[in-house]
Image 1 (cartoon, rainbow, N blue to C red):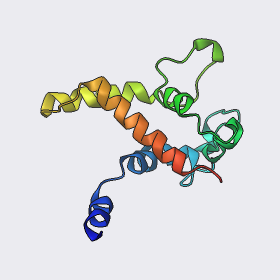
Image 2 (image 1 turned 180 degrees about the horizontal axis):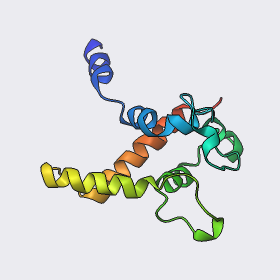
Image 3 (image 1 turned 30 degrees about the vertical axis):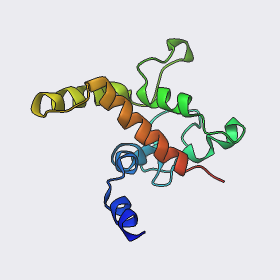
Length: 128
């Protein structure tokens, strides 16, 4: 009924918040690769995030997406990476927060949560 709608509206959308603060400058507000910084890195056309499912047979490639955002475990053979390695930034941030708060999670769990929240938001941006 009414209560669930109110609670849902009140809950922060972490994935959207993260996307808008860190990703939209390159990937664009709607994920189409048209952000103001889009031309500043030499990407091979991987900037349109709305086509990820379409290019993967209609299935959102959740594992590939989370690994790409994280960037810490990617094979070096794929050449230099133009995108920031967010896993490192997130880990530093999580460790700093851990020092100041009584977080129930360890730093790595917080990183994973942030990356999956972001991937879940990207899934919502997929072209139908």
